[in-house]
Length: 183
Image (tube, rainbow, N blue to C red; front, side, top):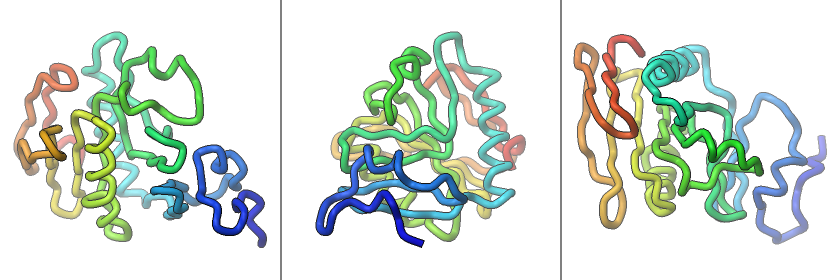
């Protein structure tokens, strides 16, 4: 099968190229002009993400939206699709190919063994570089939540919580998150 979206030889992939990719069982992201392809998550991964989304949805204030399946891009040559995000609802009303990171309050990645390095290293660096204030890493196998907060030069670890604990915070909004409810 040929790829109808492939840019010209030597050209970088951009956010605009994504609209020509097939709708299949792959997740397409771009890092610095290079196309990254991953299979969609398995059922357990999806269950964890959806349980967390349900908890966040219930506690989110008016004007704040918890979402999935929408990418974040600060420049045309990089584009990532977090498992969950929290943004102002007005940011989604503007349309476009991707969310502007200036409007994103939190991104969440549920770690998959097949691409853990991408979430733990690459996305951590890139999300910090574009100024997203909060980054949560949910590790289903370890049943932990790592909370990362924007700091000079990247993210600093604010907390690591395990099943049996309740994460209480005011950011991105007042929230009580019992970890046992997502695993």
